[in-house]
Length: 167
Image (tube, rainbow, N blue to C red; front, side, top):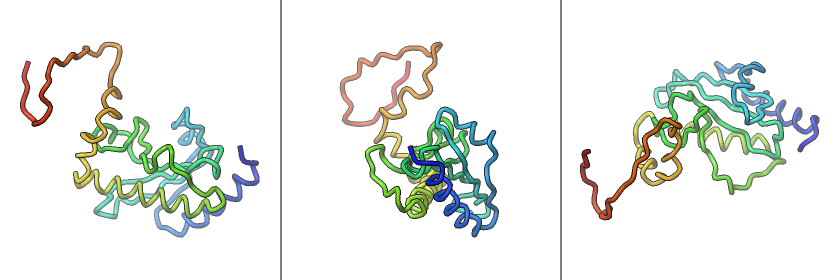
């Protein structure tokens, strides 16, 4: 866990960079707490609704262990299971969990994940990444399952070609 001085120095560096953009605001403590259990310490919201390719807000979120934990990028949670790579709380998967990053250059890491997050939003809006749902089927399969969900058992064996199946 970084010291509060390390977190504060990294957060200040990001704040100075992000405030160079128009339409940026810091998140309130309540907004950060809305990402529980992720332990978000601070964050910013960038209003990119004027960009036709993005057309929405994007949030930069700093977990309490930043800069030793990667910053997170989020969009509207309503995009979960609508666009690939969006978690239930709107956090965008920008890096695989196994990815390494440089905790001594938090600005470069944040710029990278912000660009990756913006690209996911652009592809989601245009529909060019919908095939990612099929490629990562197991990542999404049980996300919307509740206790009242009906179990499904498949007896299909031929998965070579797509076809319509009805009950």
